[in-house]
Structures are given as C-alpha cells and as structure tokens.
Image 1: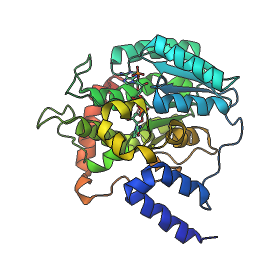
Image 2: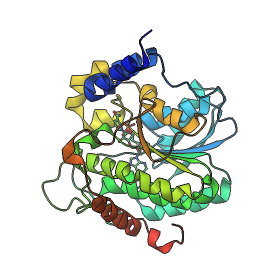
Image 3: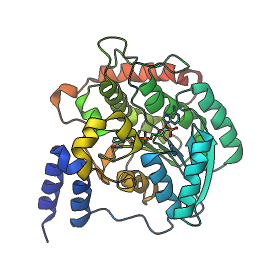
Image 4: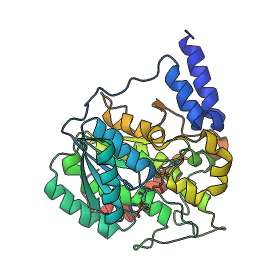
Length: 325
Ligand SMILES: NC(=O)c1ccc[n+]([C@@H]2O[C@H](COP(=O)([O-])OP(=O)(O)OC[C@H]3O[C@@H](n4cnc5c(N)ncnc54)[C@H](OP(=O)(O)O)[C@@H]3O)[C@@H](O)[C@H]2O)c1
C-alpha cells in the first residue's frame, strides 16, 4: 500500500496536470487510492430537506439523484417547469422512493429569486442545504433583468440573494457553490464586475464569475457562520453534460473519451452536502479534498481587491439593507 505522502503526491500531480485530475481518470485513480474520504452513511439525509438549483440538467439532476438516494427530500429549482417535471419523473423512475418537489425560479432575476424564497420559506421550515449549481456561459455579453452581467447574476448574486432569503430555515445548514476549475485562469476583476471593458469572451466571463465565488466564499462563510451555516465552493472536474455539449463543442470533441459522467461530476457536491461532520467552512474542494484557490501567481489579488469585490456584492445583492453582519 503506498504511503500517505506518496498518495498525496499522486493526487497533486493529477490535480496540476488538468487532463488527469479533472477527467474520469482522476476520479477513478483517487477512489482507488488509500485515504479516499469515506462516503456519507447510507440514508445520511433521511428526512432532511435539500435545495438544488439548475436541477433540470446535467450535474444538477445527478446531484438531485445522489441526494435523494441518501434519503433527502430534494427541492429542485428549475426555470422551466415542464422540463423540470420531466427530469423529476425520470429521476423517480430510476430511483424509486425519491422524494422530489419542483419549484420555478430564474436565478438571474433577483426579483424572481426573492419571490421564490418567500414562498419556499413559508412552506419549508427546516432546510439542511442549498446547492447552487445553476450555470451559464452566455455567448455574448448579456444583462440580467437588474442589469447585472449574466454570469455574475447566475453564479454569484442570485445565489447570495437566495441564501440570504433562506437564512431562517437554513440555520445550522450548508451552502455549496458549484464553481469551475476554469477560475484558476482568472484573477478577481474587482474593478469590473460587469465585464464592461475589453473584448467579451464567454469562457472569460464564465471563469471570472467562478473566481468571484471562490474569492468571496470566506467572506460569505463569516457572514452566514453567524447562523452556524457553512459554505463550500467546489469544482466538478470535466463532465459530459448538455451545458458542455452546447457551450464547448470543440473541447468536448477533444476530451470526450475521458469526460466524467454526470454522477461523477456531482460526487463532491453530494459529499459536501451529506458527509458528517460538515467540512470546514469557506474552502474550495474537488474530488472530496480541499484544493488551493490559486495555481498561478498572476491570479493572486490583494485584500483591497477582495474588500472592493465584497462592497460591490453587498450593493448588488441588497445586503446593505439588512442588519446581519
Ligand atoms: N460540466 C462540467 O464539466 C462543468 C465543469 C465545471 C463547472 N461546471 C458547473 O456545474 C454546474 C452545472 O453545469 P452543467 O454542466 O450540468 O450545465 P448544464 O447542463 O447547462 O445545466 C445548467 C443548469 O443551470 C440551469 N440554469 C441556467 N441558467 C439559469 C437561471 N437563470 N435560472 C435557473 N436555472 C438556470 C439550467 O436550466 P435549463 O435546464 O432550463 O437550461 C440547467 O438546469 C454549473 O454551475 C457549471 O458552471 C460544470
């Protein structure tokens, strides 16, 4: 059996050589090595309520299925009710006994997020976790109904507004933000959250917003830690989802044989939600292990950048109006 230092070295090498670590190869090797973090206990979430956004496709649907298998009542937040109902039916067929409810909400539209949350809080008094999985890669610069750049609205501001509005039932619970390994390529552009300068690139806009999630996770962890709620950001590796097929067809053609399936991509989201005790808050995870938030010296920002980013987010998410820290 390899020694723990050797296992860690293998894991780190795979992590840095993206193709190995992010593909199904990485997950397969890591699972086979000693020290792979244990699965949550069977039925670990029995009777607990969990909310998953972007539940109508790819990793979100797989996360719903994984959590339902652990006994959770899963609230599937979707923007297209008919599509969501179809996905819920397919999950119920494949996972008999799955307890699922669908809710409609456009995570990009902060008014809709607040409407949804008001109804949800009235109906669900105790929420174990929220998995903010909804994701987009807008082909052109696009603005949300409130005038935010769309990637930032879907990946950051919408999730923060939703979590704030759910703080009551979520007390003592968990927040998981699905980020992306793409964020390693981008610094925190605290000076331009709206991507108003420079040529727009879909992958850059996507990666910037995912960087914001990771950079602000420790601040959000402090804020929601006042309620005993933990925050995790994670990246799923590379999975062959409808989103990847549509937004990254060339990448998919080149990597298809090694892409993860949806359940493999969802593994760490499910693990972070269900494992006991809750993993330490404010950290970034991949394949059940905490990962560095920077691999390149060029992406490291200053405390001033993070303060500026937090000030912007407080205004964008309307946190200035609330009394909480
Ligand atoms: N697949 C990968 O390799 C990979 C890698 C790194 C990170 N991720 C992240 O993993 C998450 C899931 O990605 P995926 O690959 O499963 O993508 P996907 O198949 O495109 O699924 C994205 C989901 O987000 C929903 N969504 C998008 N905009 C929304 C909005 N405004 N309001 C509510 N829901 C919205 C979509 O709804 P519709 O079904 O209505 O379109 C869909 O259910 C994303 O955050 C993505 O960035 C994926």
